[in-house]
Image (cartoon, rainbow, N blue to C red):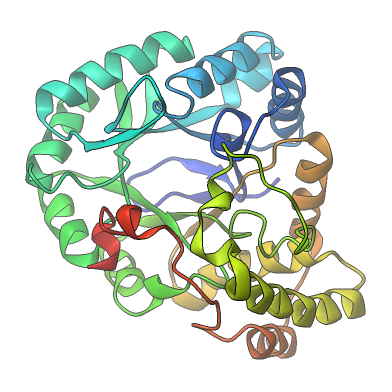
Length: 338
């Protein structure tokens, strides 16, 4: 497993990270034993970056990762790096109540995450969405205090726009920006990627398969559970879904020519963007099973030359996807979209 530096101030991490959200929330029910086995398999394969949020399943995901780390061989456990998002406010019914970036709240969130994960420090800590009522300087400054106290190693951001990234970076060292980036979500290329490149900030790219939409496995007749985020996601509705799956079929033709899967092509495309844009981009793959993890790791063996990249981008041009990446209410929380 090759590694990449997470910006100029962050740690070296595996070129693919494991996004663990789907093991606890938002994609329907998951199998706990298989989830733990998948984390173990990722560590065994050399994946070092485990990404979570304290609000995924209201703490369930952190406890799941904590269990996986406790039961992993010591050498694998010691290589694991935790990336944690905080700040989302939930209610007992699973609803969302905004975000809290106040310094007192930052310290409170961190205390609970350390306990649930069973670790003595968090490797990268970031607010999940910028709190519009709290200056980013205050939130980043509070995380910096946790760094100075030894509870956190590095400071990240999530879904922040270019101006917010600049303000945060003027306050404290920022290792990376976590943000959605894929063939069908390329909005960061205009302003955000140039800004983080200038500042020496890495990118951890989530949604590289657009929540399974461009994995090659999603079918138009698939029935989604009520607790599956995609049942409400604009890109998975009606005509939007039909249009988006037509893009996948165009991508499938290229994948078949290279004798790889659609998912592997899509992940390899994101991996290939790092040298193109001069930024260190680490894709997070949201594999919930060992089978899907194995497929995602196969993307590391896929080489896309200039002709391949041109063919991929002709099949799925920038801006080609139909529908927003979140429902309207959630889009309003994205500082990166303002």
